[in-house]
Length: 266
Length: 92
Image: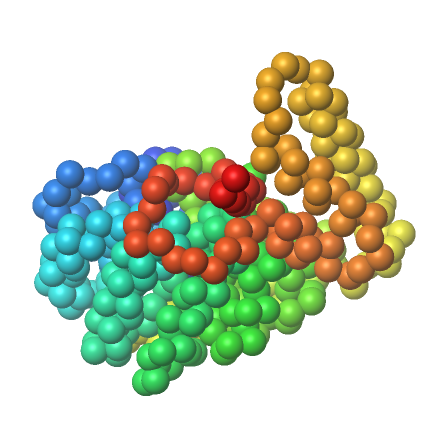
C-alpha cells in the first residue's frame, strides 16, 4: 500500500524512521515548520531551520525513495512575541521559491492570544498575496475548541480566501464539524495520548464522510508514532473498510489537496 | 460495516481494559494525600456523560474539558495545556 504522510516533523526523527516509513509504503512526506521544543534565541535560528527544511531534509528523504516537501512559517507558540515573529516572517519570502515549498504552515494559535492572532493573520495575508495553500494548527487539549472558533472567525474576515486551499489540522470530535461545515479541509492527527486514536479517526470518517479529510502522524520530538497512518490503515481493514476507501483517505485525498500547490509534483 | 457483535468481538476487551484503568486511576488519586485539583474535578464531571443516551459522547466529553471563555488576552501568561480548563477566578 502506498500512502502520503501529509504532516511529519522529520527534522526531529532519526534516519531509521525514514527506513521504516519507506518499508511501510510512504511515498511522500510533507513537513510543516513548527516549534522545536524550545524557543529559538534569534531569527537566525529560523534561517538555519528553513535551510534544513528546504535543502537538507529532502536529500535525507530521497535516500529512502521518499519525496519530501515542506511548509514555512513561524509557529504559533513563538508567534506570541510579535516583534520576534515579524523578524522571522521577513525571512520567509527568500525561501518561498524553493522547489519543495508547498505553502504557509503550520500557522494557527497556541494559547489563543491577540499576539498569536496578529501573526496568524499576517501569515494568511502572505499566503493570499502569493496564492499559496495554508496549513493550520489548532491548539492543544482544553484550548482547541476556543482556538478553532477564533481561527474560523479570523479566516472569515478574509473575503478573497479560497477555503478549498486551506486545511485545518488536529481536528477532534468537538471541532471537526465546525471546520468541514465552513468549507475547509480537515486533518486528523493520530497520537498515542492526545488528539485522535486510530479508532476515533475512523469513527469520524464513518460519521462525516471522507471528502475533505486526511490523516497524519504529526510525528515530532514528543510522544508520537511515525507509523501511525499505516497502523490506522490496519485498523480500517479490521473494521471492514474497503481498499478503495483506504486509498482515498491516505493517498488520493492528500494528493488532491497538495496538488493545489504547483510545487507538488506527482 | 461491521455489526455490533463484530465490533464487540474486536474491541470489547480493549475498552474494558481502558475502563478499569480509569477506575483504578480514580481510586489511586483518592488514596493519596494532597489538595483538590481542577483536573480531577473535570474528569469526574465528564464521567456521567458516558452513561448518557446520546450519539456523540466523545464530542461531549471533549467539550466538557474545553475552555469556554470568550475573552482573548494580549499574550499568554504561560505556555502549555493541561487537559482541562483552568477554573474561573471570581472576585470574593
